[in-house]
Amino acid sequence: MLQPQRIAPALFTGLAAFQLAVTTACAQPSFEGQTIRIAVSSTTGGSIDIQARQFAPFIAKHIPGKPLVIVENRPGAGGAVGANYIYNLAKPDGQTIGFLFGIVTQGLIEGENIRFDPAKFHWLGTVSANAVLLAHKDLNLSSFRELLKPGKPLVLASQGASATGDMANRLFLDMIGAKYKYVPGYPGQAETILALSRGEATLANTTHALYLSRRDAIRQEGIYDAIVQRGEIALDGTSRRNKLLPEIATMIEAIGELNPAALKSVDYATYQSLLGAFAIQQGFMLPPAAPPAIVSTMRKAISDALNDPEARKIVSATLKVDYDFVDGESSQRLVEKIRAEYYADARIAERLKQLTASK
Image (cartoon, rainbow, N blue to C red; front, side):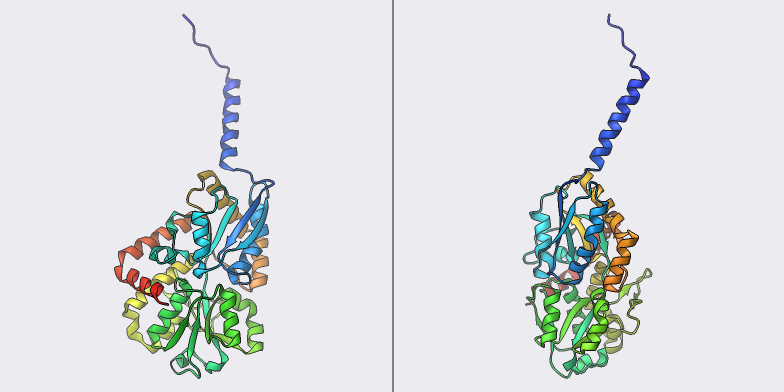
């Protein structure tokens, strides 16, 4: 009868080392010699586009193999074009990363041209976003109170009915009782601001980062300025002014003064839902079919890149504002939480669908 053979301990050690090496290699794929594309869902010159281009070299630095990282623009439909591309067309090999904005609410509404589920993306990390409502000088506004009696008609330039920032603006204007004309169809934020500069519109939305980076020039030009800010949600659930915009009232402050009854309305509950989603407004993500090893590798790379002290220094110098980063796993949980809250209140879902359907 054959006798069992003893395998030398050294062989066990060698096999274990080999297995560990294989496991580590599988867990951290290398992208050496490859090109990574960051697909941004806005036109060139918008805040998210500027951030993507500032972050790109640091993302390249922290991806194993240090690949070339380039930025491409896929704007349209309030960011839905870029989201549809990443979800349905991008290869799940890690070589195409989406940097998308406002897709959580868009995806939950499931409106026209929405072909993605926000919870099924692999979220790699997100950046929060506050915003301001810009008003043209011809409105003759010295405060938000005069939005009810403007010098000229209020015309809101928008990227589209599904653009979450403009949904928030429209809910705000509705709640304070302002009369306005809504003009969707601009391909990106840069174009809505250009429309404001030309006098085609008298109101437009922009991020606080882009506003702060140009505030001195904006005030010197005197064509438009911020009249109210969206505000941020504090840890206790209350709204607060951004610390870099202490002189500008929040939309909730304005609603409370001009129409306090609206604070108990469906519109207000819907606005609060949007405000929560803005905590993860701008996110890096991979398609649903991306393998776990690639997701893990890219989550670490994005986290290391955006927490890189040099990245914060450069982005802060360019946009005149620091940013709040939420890691990929936490972002994924937040998306799922927002999704659960959305489906728990049918009134919010219905109101958002109404906003999306309006032209």
